[in-house]
Length: 176
Image 1 (spheres, rainbow, N blue to C red):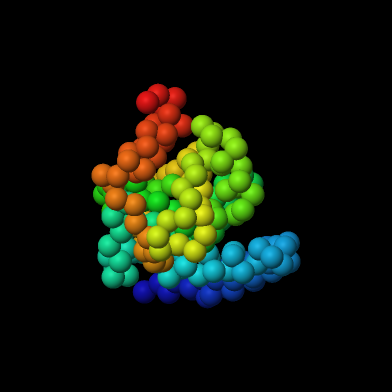
Image 2 (image 1 turned 45 degrees about the vertical axis):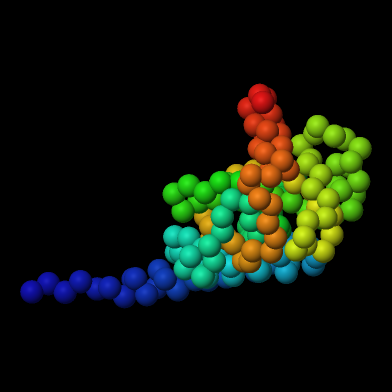
């Protein structure tokens, strides 16, 4: 009987491990210090949650109208990412259609001055600590396992929620 020498597998795994560690060290060395925590937290969240179908596996049941703290993950410039709040607009096939938001003071001020832009001024919502703004042009579907906590709520039947939906349609499809 022929014997297959599998020692090359161990050598290949060791070589790949060394290559990965070199790339990872380079990645970490390039990160600005202020961004390192965000990257590491998002990376760990992804490792811990990547095989989950939905937030129900975390004993969370996010629904339309919920304002959740969530992990949007890594981003490019001019995108909402990492750990941010977001408003759940709809739910479909284990995914949530969400609109990222911020309480950054300059964005809140800008949303008051530049009405009708990609910013939607929410103001202070019960359950949150500061006035907030939605980034309408950053809406997207996410796996609901990105949800960390549910912190506030806007009733989907309310005028505010309906106005947000209307503005989303205008932003996304250029129609009302």
